[in-house]
Length: 257
Length: 355
Image (cartoon, rainbow over all chains, first blue to last red; front, side):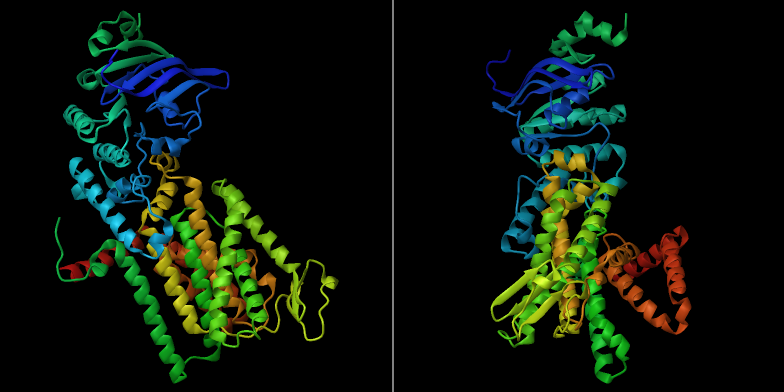
């Protein structure tokens, strides 16, 4: 639909079976450069499964995933991150034993590398690289309002701050595509409002496309440029927020007959 | 954020404080013991324990990296000590004529012991680190036994014609003047005792430096991230296997160096010395000292090595009392009231130094 922009992610006829159960089938979608796309659907529709396939936590049974024009069939989870896909998790997965700052620093693992020997012998490049990591971490914490908490343990943060920290950590790996799994879950309306502006800011400032799963329709309709609706693992509809809101199929899936 | 002025970073920064404490503790202990040795107020029993304690500390620090920081329950640390010990003993024995200086021979042997143990660690790590949790623990235990059996059945000698090596006793026939370096279940005999306490202390300091430098770096963060949440760690681009392998190899490398120092401290050394019990003992030091807490590990090792010796006068009841003390310490350190009390004291002390 959008010819001016290049696709970052192209998914074709994606499907996965668990034993005899088909969790996702025949899903095709694209995410273009700099776009915010929503992935919605009733509970159990297979949204998180799609995320797990995109990041190769699950290997898809059928179909292809092309990222930045490259086929990703042979890539594993770690290589997908190095290729430029970062994500957050529905049930927050922080490194609970690490400080807030160190959680973000782990995100730079693949981007600002140096060898363990450099660290053990404290070579000059250790100090140089650590300084770079330090500065970039500080900047990220500042943006997400976590500077005050930098030295605290990640597990001691309040819920909303943990969600923000997950996004900060994901952004540290400088992704071209950011996958957000229910970023507004458990947030109050005011926090959700802040989150919406934060997501727009992330897109503009970090030059990344965003694909997000969310149940909060206000957020989805408010910031997504296009929306894909899943139901029972099948694609139900695709289009702009206005088209989706007017789609009778979607209304039926959400409200029942 | 408040900026603290006056004190240097290694005293104020939370990250460096544990490092400074460990170093201060070791150096303080060393100075005290040296003074006691020179004034003759240390009994011969205690003097003979100094080097072994250093060895156990180094091996336990390595194990703490594996168990506390990396979160893998390793029940085979003693086998890496064993590999290091017998490598060092063999090397030192074969170089006795070529390099007369014991100091150079000791350093070479320590490096060789550490290196060979690290290679063993990498080899054993390939199958072991594909497993998790209890399975990993059981397999490290099994490899510990395998290595012990291997060394128990190794016969290794040197004579003018070169090295002789066999897994069957009668096969090694040495020319007159040859020397049996490794004699199967009898182990190594007639080793020149070239270890000393100062080397032990230096080894502890080096191993602390290695472990702390590793922890506060990209690799250390990756090791702890992989421990805390495997899936999230992979999602930020951390290769779990490589990370676990790194901590496993460094841990076995330190155990190898410790073993080398240990082996060169005794004229006879049997392979049975480094059995399952030794592995468990090292694990007890680590758990009692606190997972990830290096100073704690050092204190626990010193106390638990000395305790049975101090209780020698109790004779038959010695191990009974040892066990009771062990249980009491475990209960006390895990007691909520005691913990909060300790924390309060710590906060007070810290408040004074900062304010």
